[in-house]
Image (cartoon, rainbow over all chains, first blue to last red; front, side, top):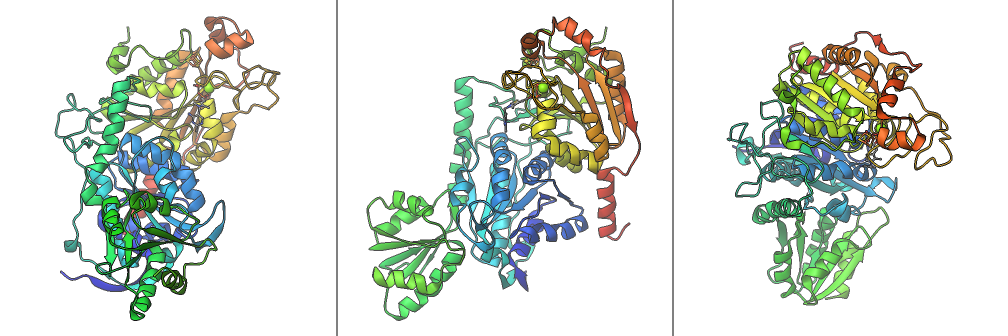
Length: 377
Length: 254
Ligand SMILES: Cc1ncc(C[n+]2csc(CCOP(=O)(O)OP(=O)(O)O)c2C)c(N)n1
Ligand code: SF4
Ligand SMILES: [Mg+2]
């Protein structure tokens, strides 16, 4: 079946895709530039029999989502900068207790209250490492309205599959942009639900990973009577300080995401086959890069785009291949250096890395990238 | 003799509480209240924050969720909304529920969501070694009020009343039969129920302030000048039911 074509805003697409992915619960707290997601879901969820609640702050919104997920719902929360900071502690709780949830962070200028209505890409490292402690994290970065739709569904699927939070990270421009968007028909995507336990209540071990390192789930109230805690815990879910048990859990948490690398890691390669210069960019910056590339190609400059779609895990292997092929990689970001350090780590001296960084609250203009490309051809 | 074992998780024993701590007495009253109401363990969820008191959830054989410091009510709100048919009991302390989690207490009460919140008020941060709390009486000593507490303490029951809580009560870890009845009544009440339980921390707070033996400290609770028993009981629309009404309306059924 074909999809339907509509004029859609990025945040609106996120809300609609959440419903398509099976989301039945949203808890949030208003903040620009993410509020449209909450507003749209406040309207849509009750129609589908789902629950919407505006909590007293982002800490509570994150907590309520985790509580509802433990009750068996697919859950979403959406926020921006300051609110994303507030969510961090409970986000770590969800990682450690392996409770699926999707968190949207629409990036605005910061730090602090910063530029509430302007785009930025300053939360890339926070998304990876914002909650304390050693932990894996899955972060997806769409660059169009349609991609917000697709990656919202993907975020729910990965979260259910790995029983870990997934963050959808995009900037204000992508969130507020309206584009003609083909909304896919449900027959065009697959929906994944968390694995349910098939063992009896007596034999159930809530934190024993299966072969895929993911434990099977049972929602509260089904007769399994188990314990969930943010303290280090054993396979029964009970607190432990046994070094071997603690380390085994920690390694399994990481492994369950690493095991799925093929399914999670994604990037777009645009005109890279013959490229001498690659631009590395994501989100709205990648859109400007694409425009710059078209112009540069007309000038005879062989340049292409490497756009990471999963920021975390980082597309190491894919980028490393490219490093051997091009004579320079222009890393364009709306921050003063975040993912460039990852690029540097992967490239490992194989090619030149050129930074184009902007932190004014304005998107990077194609002309600016073009100039950088011309200088380094 | 009441059989407490039927509700305990044997594998979690021994518990972490100090000898003579008031928490155990309250736990027993809670279990008797559950028994009195003939609630199935499968249908009960207990949600707690962080603190000595919040460790309670680990010991009870039901659906238990030990969350982050101060946030138990927010987690419980999501869980209750997701599964209105589950009886959700929240365990919190005076630091957990009134300092870091005070805002969530206000809003859970305001929403009148059907949770039963037991606040273990031992007037101190027990778990972290005896720092001053929002209910530490003026002039008492703690590790962070070495010259005596200079801040005013406050009455959480009045806070919850002000925020619209529909069932507000106060009991003590000394009078355990009335406490058991209060807890049972709180669980039965439809809407947000708040029960402040005056209790003791003999090991840390008691020793530092020379408040006597654990038994003497428990006895002293009986002499509280604060009103005990049910302080407020009214009815108002319950949050999860109101939500179901909204769904019915949005679907054109209401
Ligand atoms: C965000 C955060 N801040 C601080 C702590 C440290 N902490 C753990 S328990 C606690 C106080 C607990 O006091 P209370 O709620 O009165 O419980 P009690 O131990 O007295 O029963 C604190 C400050 C924490 N775990 N998390
Ligand atoms: S420190 Fe105090 S509150 Fe904590 S278990 Fe010991 S006596 Fe009880
Ligand atoms: Mg206390």
